Length: 247
Image (cartoon, rainbow, N blue to C red; front, side, top):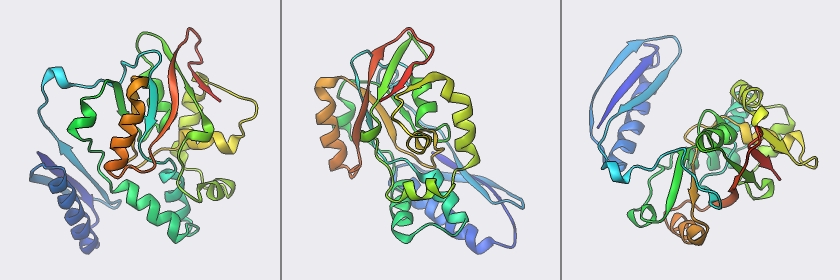
């Protein structure tokens, strides 16, 4: 079940009505119940949901239990933070915005068939960016990871906005914090690297799965509309402080 949490200026109630309507539609799509909420006045609009639910203890998928040899799947393209910054500067083009909005409004809902596959670890990719959430995935038992830069999905047009300097403060902060865990190929440019730290709004899922089932998982994700899903790297054994290698 879900509770609305709202802080909103009282001179924008028409906008609030649209926000609440959109939230209610997604709650229903997720099969949950909206059971109330809390609202206060604020100069800056804020909206979110407090959600609680139940899961069988044996069906929990943890975010820090990958196994060496696993392949990594990413279900949504990166770049929503950069696109949002370009939008604020009135530089974002309609096609890029349409793609970003599509992915941000798509639920990270996985089919029962997919969840039966040998998924060893899984996390969302949100405010800490791909690198930040991958670092959290590698926090136990000292595994490492390789990321294949050419295979990482990106929202179309995002390279243009990077070149224009449309980098959110949160993305820059992520790079300051997490780059100490990264070793990259000399051929990788700063423009290629920065998107790996981009703070995502409603980003996709990063899935660590047995290599024998990775293609089947990708096929099932495509069937569910995650058509940008790609295998972006693998889990490796590592004793280095720089656990994440970008190739």
